Image (tube, rainbow, N blue to C red; front, side, top):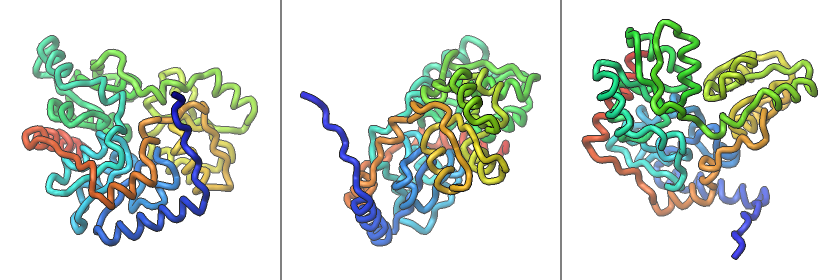
Length: 318
């Protein structure tokens, strides 16, 4: 039996769902967080749209609300719960996972410590599970990874799961040896970008600048005019005088940049750069999470406390 193809909503249907969500949000005293990789129609109903670091801080500081609805992937909603453990945190679609987060387990960290030394600090990307964060010494984001590693003041660190972000940190801090765990951890979306496609786009848009996320492959980073986190790319897009900007990151951010800056042309560096997990959240699911208060994030107390310690260490180091 053929799978159903989602029917595209009309502008009227989108507006009606958004109105329902806004009404429920007030009734429930809820705070909606959305990542930049969400569809624009979801970003429009959020109280805050941001990258992993900005959303983590917002979740930590959310006090005068009864619940957080996190339109992102599962580890992001977990991070919100870790930083605000008494808050009810809901995720619209509990199946919105992250393949990269699954590549670095707590068991893998334990194995690396036993093999190479317990004294080497473990730095894990915030794009990891609560259990993995609990097994690490500190977390980081793409915007502060190099700062976190530098401020640890050590010669070696275990770093995971994204090998390309580790490469970026290594290039920034050649005096520190980065030991990747796992050896080939990656984001499947950012790994899709390639030099050939970007070079072809540069021939078409000869005045274009290239901006790339540090999760991109090293050869893509090498040809980029600017490398930065999601928030840094947003800022670059706002400030640049360039009219054509080739963007090597997930499509949702490119849609947001074109929406916010119609006078500029932001070009997705690869048309297949779409995170299917991020797109598993829909307006209907955001509405239902509010209406039924469903899909609550639950983390065992011991895991929560250890993971919180690792995240708070990141804030201290930055």
